[in-house]
Amino acid sequence: MAVLTTIPTVAAPASPPDTSGPACSLQRSGSLWQLGIEAQELTTAIGQLAEQLETDDPEQRALALAELEAALLAEEGNKAALSAKADATCWVIEHLRGQAAYRQQQAKRLADLARSDAGRADALEESLIFVLTQLQPAATRFSFPNHELSSRKSSAVVIDDEEALDSEWLAVTTTTKPDKAAIKEALKAGRHIEGAQLLFRRSWRIH
Image (cartoon, rainbow, N blue to C red):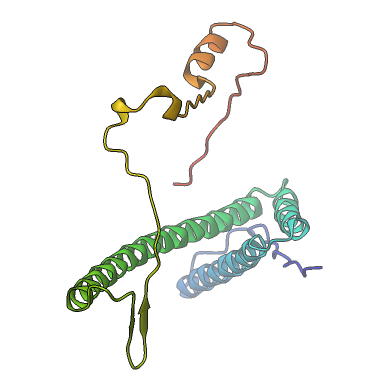
């Protein structure tokens, strides 16, 4: 059973301090510093909950989400605290999406490098085999101090002209899939289609 993180509660703002006198700037700095600490604690706590969502255990993921929802709902009557927790959650979401985008870029870069390396290896192998088989056309195996090149026979059918083939040599395949565009228009027009329905969703985006 996972140990879930308790999200700290942000206290409601106190009455405005007296802004007169030389201590005014210090009071403001202290307030801003405290707000910064609270925001950091919130973001860290929510980030820890987000890490628990990476588990393969669906029960643990459900518990983490439930705790986050409960923490937000607990501030129903406190707009300042709810806003702070929601804002901290947005920070974590943006961080995770940024991290995901970075990892996708890295994955693409590594995949491109892998294809390049594999292509060079294949070209080099073809050149090596070409030279060796030119020198020893009857050889089916080449042995070196630390490596060995071996070969085996295989067969494959090459179709020179598909149109020239008799129908008995042709395999017929039929595939079908729902025409969602046509179904959508029909449903919007009020038609009833058995096996299909029109769902309305609202999409959200963090700015």
